[in-house]
Length: 365
Image (tube, rainbow, N blue to C red; front, side, top):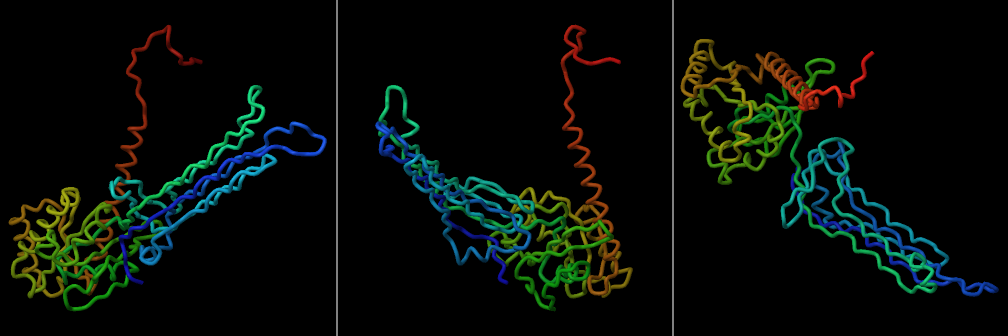
């Protein structure tokens, strides 16, 4: 299936049904009075997050969606039928903005979450509602209001805990295929990855996280070169970035420049992404001896003034990958614990009003 992460569609909510002007006319019942019913509400349009979808490709075919109108009111005080709401499934992680204002309507981040994108029109009022002691034969009614019409932009931003980034052919796809259930294309030439891949990494029962792999980033990506910049947005929701660096002999001529290239492009793209927690992962260590590897590590730490963790792995043989995945799992668990603790503290409301016996409401045993 082709990976499509952006689409623009038009949504038309249903119009409300008109109110009815009608009078009761039955034999032997003089002056029957008004009996026009109200119209029905127009159908609204909702988006719903569906875990079975992972692309917006369906919206490249169908771009217009219309909910049914409400039925007009009828005599004998019969209310018109309301139009059914239209539910449109989208992938989890979809961001919805209104065009052309680019106002954010909402994001669908959990399975089953619904988002209203176009409200149906309100029903019209029949003449029965206008009956009063001074208005015995009302001929007033209101038409149903128009449903909302919008052009909206859908943007899929993948939900992942960990994101992989690096130069082309650094070994990102090899790593995610080694440690997760993802099976991206792996080959010995650059740009084998043409679209993001998601993989579930299982450490133990009940302990797992999602890893995302995007195409390699090259110099000038911020100006549109290569593919990586287009997909960098899929790393915005991650909690940790793994910067994969190839230390193979053919790639190790200037490791400092390799790391700096990625840092420069991240800074140009987004300050938030550039300041996100990032670990350095030296890949393809099976092609080096221990002394050379230690020399490379020392060089990077000194030249970059690197303060974060550095791991050495071989995605091909699996050497060091288990230790890396366990460290990631521990980091994510500690981070979630910290967030939960912070939320619990914030939820406690502390009164700053001094205690006074005449206004104290506490109960004592």
